[in-house]
Image 1 (cartoon, one colour):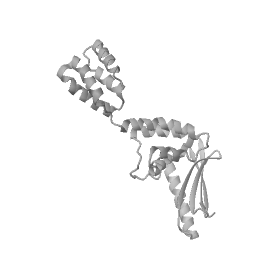
Image 2 (spheres, rainbow, N blue to C red):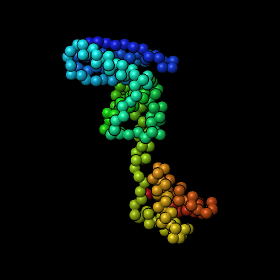
Image 3 (cartoon, rainbow, N blue to C red):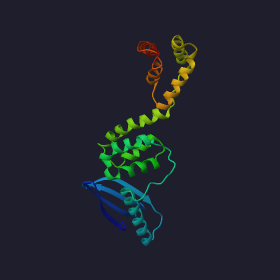
Image 4 (cartoon, rainbow, N blue to C red):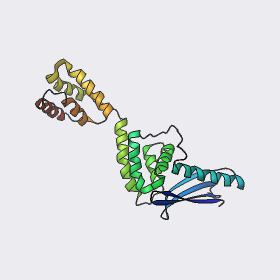
Length: 225
C-alpha cells in the first residue's frame, strides 16, 4: 500500500472521514467515506502506472476529486447514461438514500447512474457497500421509485377490443364526438401517466352532470382489463 490521505469533512452536525489509499495488489486507488467509524461508501479507480511518484499524484488527484464532488466544488460530468432518472424523481431518490449515505448521497447516486446498464444493476450498485441487513430495505424503497419511472416510460395503450367497447359507451353520451373524446383522453393519459383507472377518470370528466359522470365511470369500470 502506497500513499494514504485522510481528511475530515463537516456536513451539518456530522463529521465524515475521507480516506484515500493505493493498493498495489489490485492496482486500485480506493476512497472510503466513514461516518461514526462505519464505512458508508467506497469509490475505486484502477491505474496502470507503477511509478511511485505518479501513483502518489494520482492518489491525491482522486482524493481531491471525491472531496470536491462531496463538497460541491466539482460538478458532475454530463454523460449520456444508459438509465435515466427523471428530474422530478431525482430529489425523491436523494431523500430515500440520504439516511444511509449522508454527504455521499448525491455522488453515490450519480456514479451508479453513470455505471449502470439497467435499473436492476442501478439498485445493486447503490447498495453494494451497505451492510447485508440494509440492502433489502434500500432496494425496497428505491424499487417503488423505479416503478414510477417504468410507468412514466411505458405509453398508455388500449387493445382493439377494449377500445371498441369504450367507444360504444361514449357514443351513447356523445354521439359522433366519441372518437375524438377518446383520442384526447388517451393522449392526456400518456402525458400525465397512469393506467386504465386514470383513463376512466378523464373520460368521466366529460360528463355534463355529476349523474352522467357517475354513469360513464360505472360503465367503463366494467371493462377494466
